[in-house]
Image 1 (tube, rainbow, N blue to C red):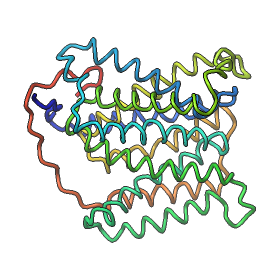
Image 2 (cartoon, one colour):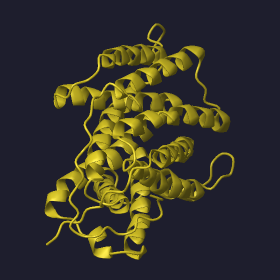
Image 3 (cartoon, one colour):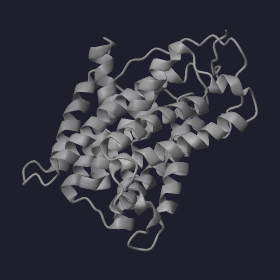
Length: 331
C-alpha cells in the first residue's frame, strides 16, 4: 500500500504572510464571539465540543466532495495515527478549551497574551529538548517575556488576575507550542484539509467522551437563546465554526507550506492586538497603560525568541502518488 503525501508546493512567502494575517483576524474576532457564547451559559467544554463537531463535519464534506482522489484524504495509515491523535488532542481540544476557560476569567486580550508565549516555549524546546543551536537573543527574549507578563499581571498591585485564568492561559501556551511543532511535521505527510479535518475529529470525539462523563447529554438550552443585545447564539456559533475554526485553521496549516513555523508564530502575534481592539469595541474590555506596555514587551520578547532558533530546511518528502487538489485554500 502506498503512502499518501501532500507533495511539495513551491513556497510563496507572500501568500503565506497573507494567510496568517487573515487567520489572525478570524481568530481575533472569534475571541469576542466565543466570550459572548460563554456568557450565555454554555460551559467551556461544551463550546469546545460544538466547535470541533461543526468543524469536523464541514471538513469531512470537503474531503469527500472536493475534486481529486478521496481515498487518500480519508485513509489514515497506522503510523500516522499517533501524530494525528496528539495533534487533535493538543491543538484542537485542549488549547481551545483552556482558552475558553481563560477568557471567562480574564479579558480576551490578556488571555491571548498568555497564550501567545507559545513561540517562546517552541524556542526553549528547540534548545533544551532537541539540543538545537540558538542565538543569544533567546535569553533577552525570555527576560522581556517575563517582564511583560509581570506588567500584564500587575504583580506590584493586588494581583487582580484570576489565578485559574492565568494557569489556563499558560497551559494553553505550552500546548499551543506542541501544536506548532506537530503541525510542522504533519504538513510534511498530509494535505491541509485532511490533516485539519481528522484533528478536529479527534477533538470532537474527546469532547463527546468528556461531556458524557462530566455532565451527561443535556444542558444545551443556551444555544437557542440570544445575547443581551439580541444576537442569536446559534449565529455566533456559526461564525465560530466556519470562520473561527475551519477557515482559520486551514489558513494556518496551509501557511506552513510557505513559511517556517517560527515565521507563522511571529506574524500570528498580531492576533492579541486585533483581539484586544475587537473586545474593547464590542464588549468594553480594555487594558490599562501598564498592561498595554507589558503586552508590547511580551510580543517583542516572543519575536526575539522566535528568531533565535537556527533551523535547517527540512528535506523534501518523497511522493509516492499524486496529491489531490487543495481547495479552498489557494496554494
